Length: 249
Image (cartoon, rainbow, N blue to C red; front, side, top):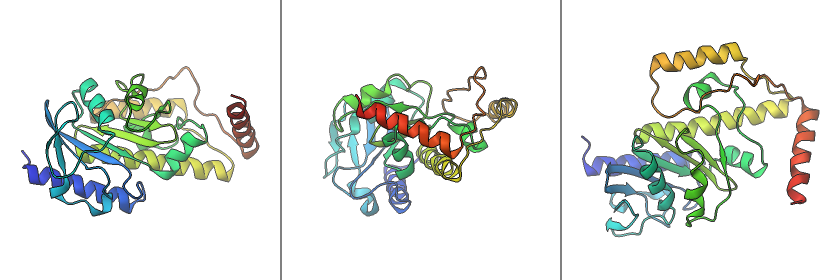
């Protein structure tokens, strides 16, 4: 079992990685780790993830109330607590603003195309949750339709939330979400997105089962042929329709 200092140090290391990769800016993002059913470590508000030190990490209870620490916990600890309440299998939560994945939510484009075997194995399609005001219950509530079947969630106009059986896993899921989004964006810019065909998707899901990969996976609907190739003209038309629909709301 890891000591309190080791857990706090690991939180700081993940925070540094988020900042180095450009997944957060200024004092964006937050990280938490479950100690037991009633105690959690989390990052403080108002501190850059590049500057985190173990003595800055806060201990809170299941309601997000501070138990230990000089600083105050993130105001967005509510969404972390919602995850822990609904998902006993989760012991770590990471919230960040990965630029490309977040851009998908701003453009109202779903990150649901099966293009990379690694992403198919680990995260499947990533749902986009309804927009919510930061630090309110709107964001935790937006997770509810998806929380039982996914380990990664895009928060509309607000970034991404990833969970895992440990902090390393939660961070890796965040990396996978952004990398998948980057590849998908580049493919769109090159003029076509060729998805992995159904027969190969089935093989990947069988492999996932054999490998006993941890975490919740949404599965794949094989009734819908995923190999929808989008050329540049179709993509422009799709984005235009979505922009016009948004403007007419």
